[in-house]
Length: 200
Image (cartoon, rainbow, N blue to C red; front, side):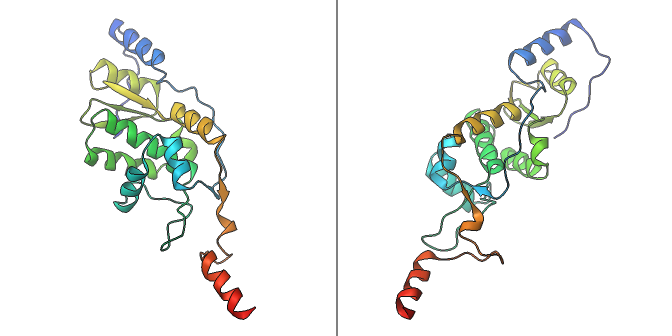
């Protein structure tokens, strides 16, 4: 998904493409703060922050497109917890789908994003011509794609990061350790209550 750098190609077309990229907020000036990894958000909160339906969230989890990384569901009554990074990817998937990119290309993009460090994500701009998805990590790469006509639209992950951060500021998150013991086993609260009633 990476594209080549375009150093030393300062043409009038290149200046125009660079201006377009700047106007669209696709260039790289984003400073972000990385949220704690053990804080997760329940399904409805993840949906609200990513702008998707619960049906989409559930389908994408079942098909392993975007799975909750803080805590997966363990039987009925347990709650999935999505990390900040998961919600960022959910929002990107929604944007790519809305612009007509195929699910197969989106899967490739998501797999690629999963391999990147959390802080790296904020420095990436995804560009697409509606068919393929390209990762750009420098202004030159963005400009090259715009100039070559491959970048019909772009998604600056730093900007999406800020949107998700703003959405989650007013929504409840929870620490995974609250429902999991030190060995990582999930507690079934209902089963715990039943046991307490039987022994108490």
